[in-house]
Image (cartoon, rainbow, N blue to C red; front, top):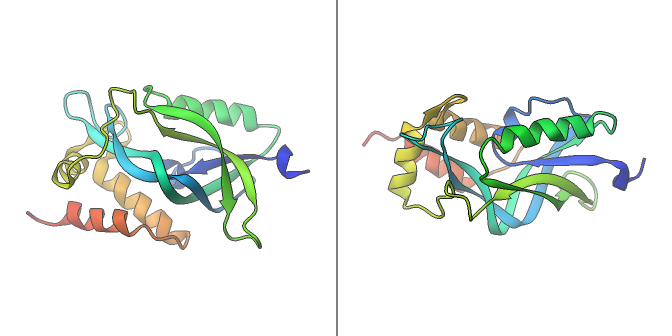
Length: 180
């Protein structure tokens, strides 16, 4: 099987620690040209329309360390459809195939991966928010998949388990947990 025959998914938020699908292998990966950012108002999973939460999206520029999943070629299309339904519960992402580097392999080979970037045209796109507003939305956001604080903590924890560091997310978690 060649690299072109393989189907990969790049995860950077809850998909890293709660994939909800079977995969053949998983490893740390690097996506260039996008960075992880809290830039999506959540009206379902981590908040509501009346009391929105805040979740991650991929924004233009920089780079993002995350997790790559290789899917079984026989079940890949069904899994991709399920991921699409999960991520596109509201039209706030754009499905893309982008090149990622598999960072733990010699020479960090590049493969094409399915992922979701923030849709700046969506009404749920928040753009860059002031830090105090981000903290408030993450602290107060509660939806069908839990609260915003746990979403952030699970993302930081899973990155740490993968041997990856996102100092910005770790600092944000400290600020969310700090008593005012």
